[in-house]
Image 1: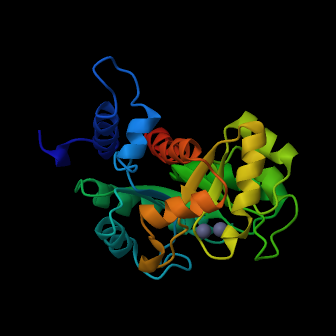
Image 2 (image 1 turned 180 degrees about the vertical axis):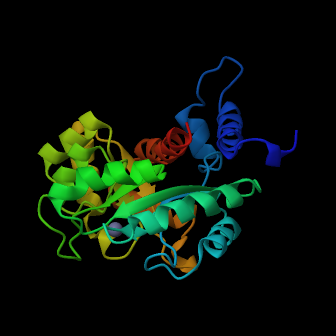
Length: 261
Ligand SMILES: [Zn+2]
Ligand SMILES: [Zn+2]
């Protein structure tokens, strides 16, 4: 059967599943951490579930952004352009369309998403639901970064709304991190300048309560696809152990699979 005749979601699921199958031994057990370290994370996809295109403040149209990511070694990305009530219904259907076209070629898988940005905390739950209804498979919330005057209460409202990823959550409190752990909201460790100031704090809060982390580039331009070695060093700089970094990288695969389930 040709790839083009199969639904894109099934192709992506097969791609991820087959990759995961290679991670298991004949006994079916997951490979050991030590094995992963020896292979320098080579068995995990390079993934960025938080990127921007010309549909908000990114530099490229989705097709070129995907191609640039592919050339940089990435195999799965999510387009998560900035959105509020003014543009959400414009962006998402177009992302769904282009992601289907990109993904059916089989080089790189593109997931349609959105980053709710500077949305009033009281409106986050409603807009998050609307995003999913429009076809967003990953809902990211633009969290309380130190570099912008994001409204206080955004982190908490996003977690309560059950977004997939709380991006650059700044000085997130332990109480919020605990709630994120309970709700299954992933907290972002970011390679993006400025937003990354609080990576160490986010990692520490997550470590105290078992909140799950995800590593993203928040890529706005080709140079932001920093690749695995630098991303891993940034994660180490945040104080994460090798084991925690591997779990975080696997979380990206988990979210991608969930998005396409
Ligand atoms: Zn953001
Ligand atoms: Zn962003």
